[in-house]
Length: 435
Ligand SMILES: *Cc1c(COP(=O)(O)O)cnc(C)c1O
Image (cartoon, rainbow, N blue to C red; front, side):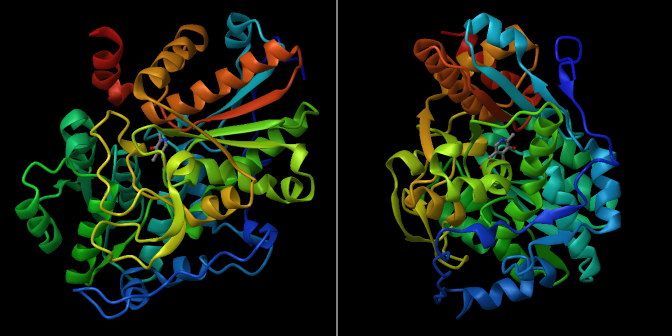
């Protein structure tokens, strides 16, 4: 394949993966068990999960086989939203950096709602419908997961409700408007709609909200409304499992040009875009640590992997989720109200945490300005306007490419462009143009 003339490495729908990959068989050690505990709404968090989650999704947290067929209806909708996505060579960025490295990026920014979140939203809405629920409820940080769920729930004739971190809702009102157009209520969190929201507002009147608080409110809502399933956009094994399409497609695309990745880069919050990219490559990493580098880029506003502790914690503010072992800042940590709403989370995915503990995941943190500057370089060279979260992956990819130049070696750097930034324009403008 001549990349000079054809910068996109495409897969046809016939070539696209038809199965999800069970990466848990490749783990270097068993994942520490989730711990149950009592809270004010229930004696057992694991029991709550059984009430509010579609049973197939709970089964997918305990995978056994190596491969699982993707249901026909889910595959059909994945093609509809733009899968498989292209893998593009960033030739102009390489030239600008004057690096011997080859830089590729996976274009999740091209999907219909502007981010990779649709990959699991479609699967989860499908299973909620199959289980007989009438609606779905969830949290969202920057709004991308909320938008994806609003669309996916329409595909399956479900109602939807979203709790959105309050500061992000004020910064990015268009995401909530998109939801409203699809009859999906976006409610600012913390807010007056749930017991936990009301109690928190009493305690901290001007709480900016974050993902952990919105999760508590969404679970509270699902417990109160039996016809609603609670779905999660990140942090769980089933979400990573659906997102393995990212790595599986990337592998097939690189095979088409006889290449292998040396470094896989993605931004990390709940770990679903990073995990989806790296986990299909975990087996070779475990067998040969030098074969490939897994690099997670996080925000200095929530530096879990670089500065957090590896210990048991809840994923939400109120403790309505079972405790899992991951890198955490503590569940009462409130991240600064930066524009990068998708990375404002106190803890992370237990899978990514365990891999980091085992020395299989490298991590780096950037502040908003560093990330947005890198994203501007990417926009100027490649013309792609990336989401604020993706900007962190771009910063890390550029840093690795510069290292290649200093060391005079060529490496294949693949980063995930997790979304586009068109609805985050105000944040970019504030940080880059008002200094
Ligand atoms: C949600 C989101 C993220 C962060 O979530 P992860 O679960 O860590 O992947 C990153 N980028 C975009 C565009 C998002 O919408």
